Length: 398
Image 1 (cartoon, one colour):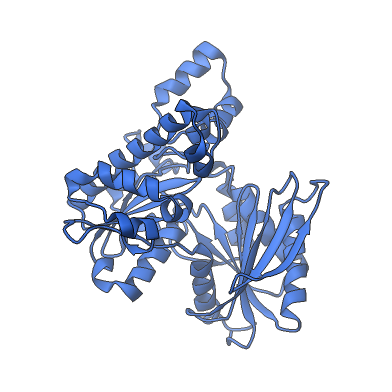
Image 2 (cartoon, rainbow, N blue to C red):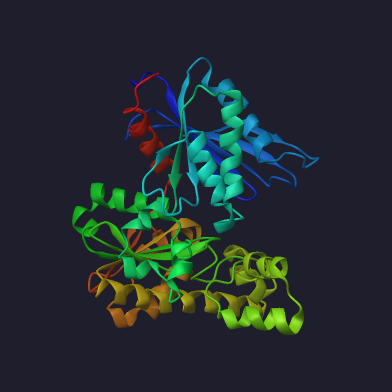
């Protein structure tokens, strides 16, 4: 397919939202506009802004009947309105789980879509929502290529020993292994560092993707070595509403002594735990920082403690540490969390430059710090656009 004057559309579907963005084609394609439909299933609201942040459109639905497929239809309609006669060349999608089959972005056909649907049990809270927009677009624009970009793919480079649990081999062979997630975010950070800090890109890094979902990734020479998330996106760090790493004996106890079934366990570890469960106040770090409740302070302290412990684990997997990178919502915007994490990592040789940390851009460690610390904004949608442009440029028209 020859890249024309059209554009690349990107959809990043979550459990209650769909982010979207339109880019010029090509690896360095400029952003045209972006937005999201949020609160899907409750009181959906759509907003779109241009590259300068000017609001282009706002819509809302008070009846809450908009599902992911209907939201996709609304996004397509808005895109046609804002693009006028400019064509969309392809759609790129974030898909959380690629299993062991997909270690790189893939052009979606019926066979690929069927295989991705088979992976739903491995990511039940994400995969169905990722696939809904793909199906909606296939119905209204079957002629347009669609590309799946996987959160798990970046971690396929990990050593085999880092991907397995200490379980019987037949269970491992059935697909129960460590996959890792947030791969598109990590991939973007590594790609960005190659362009802006090439020496750092080849170093031993721990990238901290800290948001409502949170994880760490150990990176050496631009490749994933280890990650805190494992078989599912609930493992590892404490998150907004997710428990993070948990002794499986706790779950057995709740089942045997308190009558929990699988649905109760799922609700507990995905929706009722983490910052929300410990604080009893909120899952949002901004709200917790403003709260005077001692439980809110305890939730923040536990969040930081778990990050610091796991940074030690990632540093061990790397055989040392050269730099710590903060990214995502909390990582990019919460100076207090960054300061607390860096203070907990003083044993690694990390010291903070308070003024730089308050600015929250670029290097935030002091000149005397043996390990550097940085804030690098992530951009999963741009990464998806790059992959989509590259992949469709190699596809010949039928």
